[in-house]
Length: 231
Image (cartoon, rainbow, N blue to C red; front, top):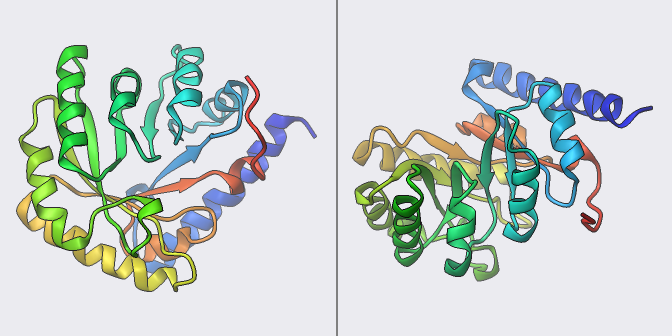
């Protein structure tokens, strides 16, 4: 089987899972965007995904993402940065990322705004919400979401998109995503345009869709098990 055929088969399976989750939740399939997480996979796989109709691509490490985005600059893609972001990497990330999912502190939001102004770009930012107490996974507590969202919404060349979260390890993802939905709805009452809910990965996308996810981040189910990235 060629790599394109393999990815095409996997994509069909993922699309059916999303479609079934939407049917179960009484939602329209068009309400959910699939983000292909291509970390550790080469630009050739990004090109195959684009040929198969995928338009949203996600990465979590700037060192890998910057080069890959440059190699694929001729493609009409929306690039999502989904990993934890240090301020010293903001200039590079703003150069290619259309959406940054992992904004979890005011200093980072202001740095993104500064670099977006400098680059003449508008970047959509999501507030990463911590659904557990693990500092290694990033995110802000639910109580701090409104204040951070207000900072993002007021920043130049930055658009407040909504929220992102990762389900806690060892917890029923449905319960976690139920909490995220409440946080998202509260945010939308303050900022009606912040409708994005980035939640769900290969193992829990159905639960995420059931609780209102608008974007699911799928890597392993699309491209296979991770391997060390070699440029």
